[in-house]
Image (cartoon, helix red, strand yellow):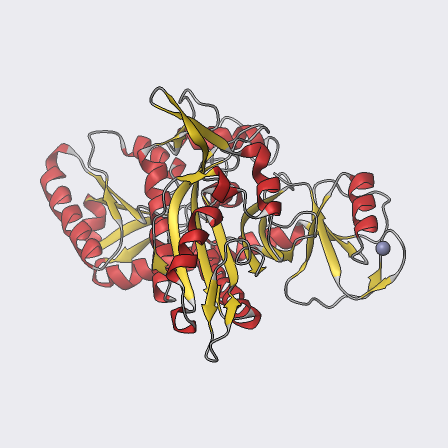
Length: 469
Ligand code: ZN
């Protein structure tokens, strides 16, 4: 059990789960830089490997750029440098010598990559260029840090693409959104796609689509973002290509980034007071196998449970056989805390009846599977767990959204949906009056008829606002 209740004290509950499930250790002596402990890292690796699978399958090439970026290279795009100025780490010395030029520790990799892209891209035949990397980035967070959600060293995935024109880059944004849908399904996470306001878009972007999910305390968590850069970076970095007619043109660019916040999101969205619940699609162990024996049948039970382990592993499931010398109850407690989606138990009576007993972490449902039907039975259960987790999370997210048409009695713990004319003045006034942050307008058009909540002008698209993590 967690020591605090998820609904009543989300912040403490979250930290409690991170510690008890063994996800990370925050005692490392630099604030906001935590140690990934083995079980947490296993989860991150599962997510990373699924991200690799998706990007490899859509013809992106994985690259790995240096961590350090020369200051002059970093400062080329004016908005970008302004946006990151206050939160980058600098390397100023090498050995005993002060460096002639300071080096930035990457907060993101545009400025590391783009001078190289300028060398790599010559002709329209080099396009589209689609790359990605999975690396750590560094940002000096001044707000209160929190494992996976607000850290100073961030495990990060970023794709960077170059295209002949705006429309081709736009198609990439659409492909990114399809990839996102598959990743979100795998992790059973609901999300919204909102085009960020002008004052909140990524520094240097033409537009930014924020990917948000909602947490149990009613706040939203940005899990990632997709950006269309147009030629905002290719111009200062001189990334050009020769088109079919021999004319030199600037490429249009996109990026898509997500981070370890996905782990934070899955803890917050799926966990309960018994611990973590990990979606089968990315669970390091989808099944934990627990033998239950007495002295007189230990040999028989262990032989049978090992056979089951082999059958399930050969069928492609990620299985953990917990044959430690400990009480089954203690093992149940530990694996429930760690969120393993399916527990299988095998005892003398199960063997007599030719079944294994199961326990579903998501619903606490118990039952048996016939040994002869083991592989399809387990597959059916895991698929059903995924579907139930996804549906439940989506249902909760829907309930956390409230339509408002005035500034009276605004529910503080909801995501607000309302009319906004889109002008900066009304937007800023709304944020200042309510203390909510405008997340943006829907990327995909939503049916809406209403009036701007500030100036009363008729509007046909809603805006969303929330308190953010
Ligand atoms: Zn207005």
